[in-house]
Image (cartoon, rainbow, N blue to C red):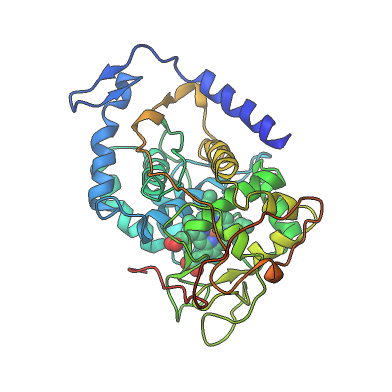
Length: 355
Ligand code: HEM
């Protein structure tokens, strides 16, 4: 139901953008539905070369996605907060980087700023195009929609709009609802944590991944968050962290609580080994998130400049030594998917390089 409503919203957004005429061939040789999008192809090349190490699903690609969320979520449907997906987090980085929930975001704003200046784009277009291009480097990721033409941001977003891993489920869902997202939409956005790692939750172990396949946009994180916890990846547990199933892996308290709460547990479980459903839902909700606060009728649909990722063939598997006996299943109304187990001894998850 919620996804159907979301499809309608995105369809409206698409309809409001300028109607596509015949494809234009740009001077660079690429084609796009709108001649106005031609200038973005060199920016995509610039991003790949200067930000994403030639096309990697690494630290910068992961952080670019986190940045797009921390930028957009400053919005409130009631007004009185930030401008949404407007790039304020990049343009007013001195202000927004100081917020507790944005710890470590300065790494990516510092990396993006010189490329942003070269790009000639508005800060909002740059932040949200960078997220789309970055995740296209991760196998299995959907090709995100991208609308061009956001005006420059007028002010920094206020503090306390970004959810924290120490927050309880009620406050997380309330914050998402205030920004316009339902519980299933919030869970769909958390597919992002399949290409995620923490530098700041335990600063002594930067780059600690949230799942065992951190460069693949698969549904592994939805499975591994449900597995029984055994240890902390660092010397001790930190605020916002709970015991994780695998050595070298971090499990956020917020992800675990959302996976167990009756309001969200079935949406969480429903994505396990459902690559098409998960990526479809993520793409829809990301389109909504990346347009928060924007007048879509004034934007141009330049989605065809966004590169395509390589496919993820699946199915996902239990990490070696794990099985259904280790699952903390909180949704009883859906059958739990039957999955094979990777052969061999229990793995140690390696940190993301460059963190
Ligand atoms: C309940 C909501 C959320 C909470 C509490 C949360 C919390 C966190 C935390 C604590 C980290 C680790 C930061 C660090 O220590 O370096 C993180 C990383 C990340 N988050 Fe979230 N997050 C949430 C939702 C989202 C959403 C909606 C997105 C994107 C749509 C997102 C994308 C990411 C990504 C990609 C990373 C990894 C960044 C990197 O590896 O550099 N998160 N998140």
